[in-house]
Image (cartoon, rainbow, N blue to C red; front, side, top):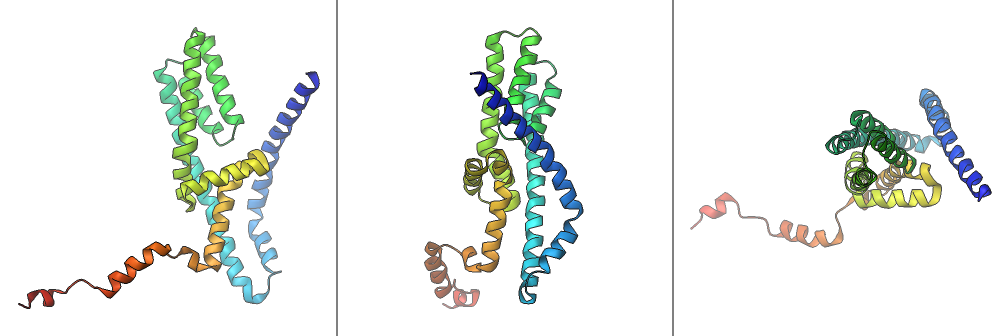
Length: 231
């Protein structure tokens, strides 16, 4: 049992370390992005450099849209959590809501910290255990609503990804790469979709069942005003 707890704490420490390393690395990458992109494109044959440069710009736009969409969702979640906690009479609901919104971007760990903080504050300021359970269940329901309805629609819409594809990408990312897979799954999936459509434009064409209807409409145009005036 002791070794199991030690392993759990070690895994938690590793995740916390990555939560510090990755943002710092991302900042330095963004500062040197132009030089890095130019260097990488220089290795591409001249005939393909324009295409690769276009795709690089598209990928950056996708990641920027993803960050903006995620920021919107975090703000909405923080506002919703504040309202829920305020209605349930939990002290410091505003600070808890702000913290929940900021932590929403961190899968699993952020939700657990938000639930634990709300439960501790609820018990510390005189709420019963039963009422505290109600508070936690309300936050769990809110988390479920955002994870399965609001976030896929807002974030997926921001990067041009269907909500179902958004959910599927997050599931694949979580299975293959854990927390960071969940964080990066949506922009990576949207970037792959953008690349496929760019190099294979027919993938963006209407589905097969739409073609006969369009062909029928083209072969049978609506009567013009001149035709209607003929007796």
